[in-house]
Image (cartoon, rainbow, N blue to C red; front, side):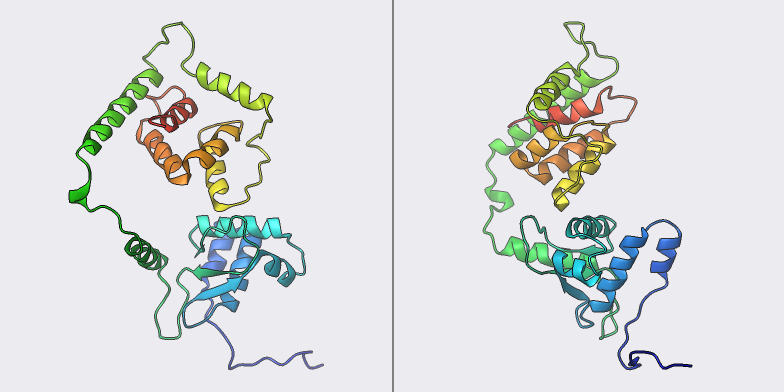
Length: 259
């Protein structure tokens, strides 16, 4: 029997949980995501459970079997499924740090992504001098009440029991806007390739709302940012499905409140 073409160092190893294999077998991970996660796991720093990577570097590590765009999508999928976390990489080409969920640390502990995110959030808040609760202007409560009233009015407008005064569907405004968007360049939901975590999330929301075109939500992303989109989507989800007739139109109208 011939010797292996390389020497296995039994003193150089990491703990790899079998639950990753279970996630693959049960369909929670695609094979490409599984392979990438294992690679990140093997390359992580055992002291902090963090791996330093770049999309171009990972593509080369896999002998360019996966393109940089493919690696980008796989990384976003792993982040969405909460196997890893990393900061937004839109427009960046350099390397970045990836925190790996439940990675076994050399001190006997494990990486807790929620704890790390809370720590990072606390540091970010301490770096900015925002208003205290006592300093919030009195007008804020009035604005919030108006927003609540506007949302209630929208629910009534898009409910199954309401009728448009002109005898038209309450989705007409949204349909007209989509037609205008299509005239300037249509971006179908089907086949859309996200280039960042924000675009990935918008794509998921568009699919869940049954939208056909990405133009409006991408425009809203640039105009309002992802937190505003997530807030509007939560408001849609909070309404019973049997109550809202056109969820996509209701979502778009929520985004346009108090511009």
